[in-house]
Each structure stands twice: as structure tokens, then as C-alpha cells.
Length: 250
Image 1 (cartoon, rainbow, N blue to C red):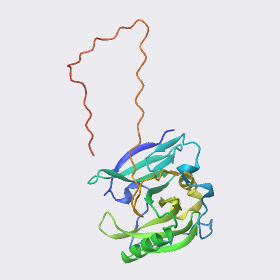
Image 2 (tube, helix red, strand yellow):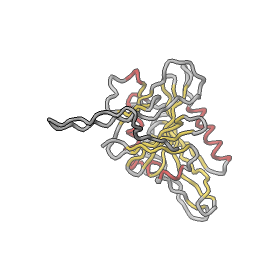
Image 3 (spheres, rainbow, N blue to C red):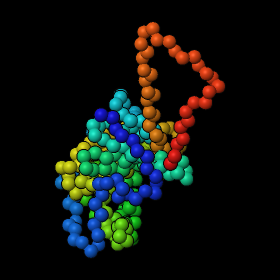
Image 4 (cartoon, rainbow, N blue to C red):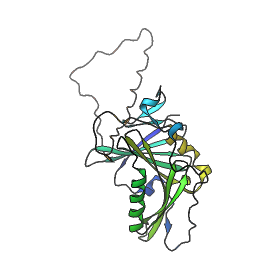
């Protein structure tokens, strides 16, 4: 089954993915459990995600420019667009009750940046009144966070999220997990497999560290023309007749 594509504005609230549970401040919520599969301090990329130079074929992948996403049955792929800059800023994969938001950045050639970025994310969430606990996870050191959000009735709630970061050759991949993948490790296998199978296309151009790599909308295959029965005659072309128009509305 081919993945679905829906466009999403940059300023849409994260809870609209349909997988994030927002707990009202007045309610009682247990802290999310850390993933059980602890990993070493430094994540080993020997099983992915991959740099494009490390793969022989990208057949079956969805080309989003800086990142190639493997197709999976039942997968939905959503793209977030910064309308002011007219650019795709992130891609979100939804699968089996979980979601993961993907962004790729330029990084230094000689060192990783996840340790530094992880500390900055934790500090930012804490300043907003949330919590961020550093834990071992399937992708090395991760953050289990509760992010303050405003509920529909105007109260303050908390949205669980799980932050993972992977340092590659001159690139850095940030994956933010939502839904079941945050606190149920056995339910995270599908989206984690997607992350491990990603292929990053860094490009050779010089870029400042942490600069967001460009994503793009996937190319849609042109619809096949129906075959004409034998002996059928084509209607004569009318070159000056106005045809149908397509207007894109964001």
C-alpha cells in the first residue's frame, strides 16, 4: 500500500496528529516509562539510519529531498510547510498508533551535536514548565518529555514526547516520537524501524552547522491514459478551447 500524503501548516498544533495524549493539569497521570531497550552512550549506526553513500538502492523509498523515507503498509506521511518561507520544514510518519516527526540538519564534519542539542531541548522544556528526563533508548541517549500545552477548554495540560537524535556524516537527524511510541516500547517498533531505514541525502554544498536541510514534496506519478479500443477515432483537437484549471489552496 502506498503512503498517504497530507499537507500540514507549520503552525498547526502538534496534538492534531491524533496520536498525542494531552493530560489536563488537574488530572492524574503516571510518568511515561523509559524504553526498556537500553543502548550504549554513543549510538551505533551500523543498522541505520543511512547516509546515501552507504546504500546501493533506494527503490521503494519516498524521495523528500534531504531524506528518503521507506514505504510501509498503512503508513501516513504528513509534511509541515512554513508558508511564509514556502518550504517544507519537517515530515511526520504515522503508523500503528504512533508518530515520529523527522528533521535533518547540517552538522560539523568532525564531531556530533546531539549531546549539546539534547541539553538545550531539556532546558527549554523545563523553562516552559515541563519536564525532560534523559534516558537510554534504542537510539542512544534520549529525552522523555512532558511538554506544556493549552487544552481546548483553556487549561494547561502536558503532552508526552520522546526526543531522539542521531549524528551522521556531516548531518544530524532529529526524531520526535508521539503517541504509543513514547511510553510503550513494544508499540514503537514500527516507527523505530522507519527511522532506522531512513536514508539521508546531505549534499556537497557548504552549510552552517544546525542549518535545516531542504525537504520537498514528493513527486506524484502521472495518471496513466486509458487505452482506446481498436478502431476508435480520436476527437479532433481544439487548440483554442480553454481546458480545466487546477488551483492550489494552502
